[in-house]
Structure formats: structure tokens, C-alpha cells
Length: 152
Image (cartoon, rainbow, N blue to C red; front, side):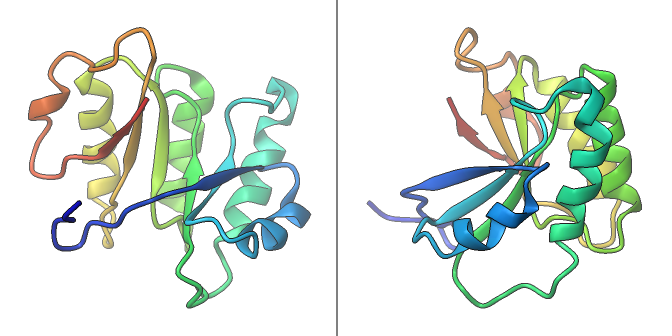
């Protein structure tokens, strides 16, 4: 398998609940290629704000040279919690280096997030998660110059 320049194979990753920041260091040392801090599944609506605050605080520390990719899985941008996640990321002094978008249904969702986060000085290398029902959201193949990875 040949990787494109800048591309990186990811053999394994682990999710860490945003409400449980004490689990983050252990996940980073587990030997996985990617650690994903989770704000969507498993976080009750009443706990979303606290999970978001705790999760974003994890990205405040200077990045370690450990070859582990660190990302944040936000809530769906079709829901209020997803919009609040994006707003918090945009207002963060140390935003996550990448995000995972859950249950993407249309290319418009990816384009929206790309436009919003693309305005940030550092840009973003986002990752989209395609829902099992759609496998390939309509129009995702032509979503612009940055094409996020797709995970089913």
C-alpha cells in the first residue's frame, strides 16, 4: 500500500469519553495510532457542555512527540450540540488538530464545517464519518480542495 505525501495509515484507534479526561493519558500510551475524544455517543444531553469543556482542555497541553494522532469527535452539525461544539472549537485558544464528524449524510455538512473551520488561522484536516445507511453522502466526492478521510 502506497500512501500519498502527508497521508498516514491508521491501523487502530480508541475512543475516550470527553467526560473522563483521566482516561486520556492511558489511551495515549496504549499503542494505538489515534486517540479520539468523544463528545457524541455516550454523553447524555445534560452532560454535553461539561464534556465539551473537559475535552477541549485536553488539547491545551503542548503536543507530545508520541506519533499518536489526537482528534475530537463532535456531535452532528445537524443538531444544536454540534453547532455548540463548532463554536467552542472556533473560540478555543488551543483547538484540536482534527475533528471527526459523526453520521455525515450530505456533502453540505462537510462543506459547512470546512468553511467555518477553514477560516481559522491554522485550518483543519477534518475526518468525516459516513453513516452506515448512506456509505457515500451525495456530493461528498466533490467537496472541495481538502477531501476528508471517510470512515464507515
